[in-house]
Length: 478
Image 1 (cartoon, rainbow, N blue to C red):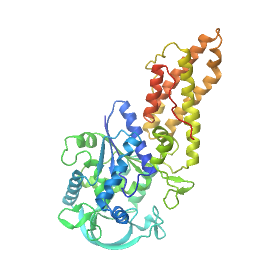
Image 2: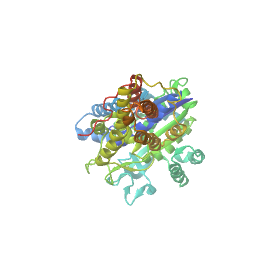
Image 3: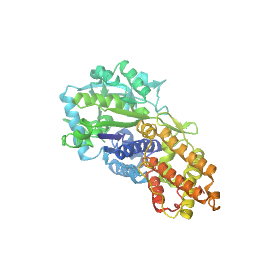
C-alpha cells in the first residue's frame, strides 16, 4: 500500500522547539513501522517561511528576510540528522516549485468561484497569523496566545468561500476515523456546526511584502496559511507531475497529516475546503498531539523553561531523546516535562533498565557461550499488540510493552541466577541454557525497538550476532 505522511511546517521565526521534535518523531516511528511491513511510504516535512511573524522577527534581528529564513530553515533541516529521521523530502515554502503550486492553487480556487475581494474589519492575532472570531477568544485575548494583544484591522483583502463548504465539511467530519483522537473530531464538527465565516487569504503588500504575490494583483500577497497548506501536495509534484508521486501517494494512496492540537481549524477545515474547491481527494486522517508544558507552565522564552531538541540530544544522545519524547510525552494529551523528570526517566529506564540488562546478559554470553546464539524468525517476531498500538499512534503504550519485556528479563535473570549456576559444574549446562534464553529475549526486545530506537536495535542485534558485550548503550549522567 502507498502511504503519504506529513508533519506541519514549523515557522522559521526561531529555533525548532521540543513540540515539533515530538511531532516529527511520532511520524518517523510510524513510517519505520510501515516500511518494516513492506509498505511504500513517502514522508515529508519542511518549513513555513512567509507571514507577518517572520517579517517582524527578521526586522528585529536586523537581517534581510531571505537571510533570516535561510538560517532557520537550515536549523530545522538539521533535525533530520540530529534525530535520525527517515524523511524523503524537505520542502521550503520559499522554493520556486512551491511558489508555482500555490499560484496554481489560487487560480483554480478562483476559477471555481471561491475567491472574492471585500473590505473587512476584525481582530487579528499575529501569533496565529489569523483573524479570530468571538468564539475563539477568552475575554479580549486569543485562547492560544493570551499574552498577545489582538489588533483591530480594517483591510480590503481577498476571501475564500469557506461557508460554501459547510455541509460537505460536516459530511467529511462524520467519518469516524478522519481525526485522531476522536474528541478533536467532535471539536472540529462543533466548530463547523456553529457556522463558518469566509476567511481572508491575502494581505496588502504595503503592510506585508514578504509572501507569494496574488495572481493578477501584485498589490496583495497570499495569506500565509493558504500558501503553506498547499505544500502538502506541492511536495508531491502537484500540479505539474500529476501522474507521479501526487497520483501514487495522494490520489491513490492513504494520507496522514500529523499536527498540534491548535491546528484543527487549519488542517481539518480550511485545508479540506481548499481541496474540495479543486475537487481533490481530502486527507484520509489527521492526528493531533498535545502541547508540552514545563513545571506546570507552557514553555516560553520569557519564563526561561524552554527545552530544545538540540539540548536534549547534547545531554542524552539521539536514541535516548527519541525514547524520552515518544514514551514520556503523551501522544494526544498535554504533558509536563522538566529536566529533573527527564533525568529520572533516562536513568531508571535506559541506564539501569535496558542498558544494564543488555550489558549483563551479553557479558555472560561472551564469557560462557562458545558461539553466538542462533536466532530464528520466531525469536525475532514482532508482537501483534505492539504493532497495533504503534500504528494506532499510541507510542507510549507500545513502549510500555517493550519495557515490560525489559522487566521480565530482569526477573528471569534474578530467578534463574545463571551467574551463580555457571560456577558449579553440575549446573553449568543449565546456566548456558538460561543465558541463551536471555540472549534471545534481548534480541526480541531489540526487534521491537526498531521503529523507535533504530540505532539501539542495530547495536543490540550486532552484539548478539558477534556474541560480545556492547559498548555502553546509555552512559550514566555526569
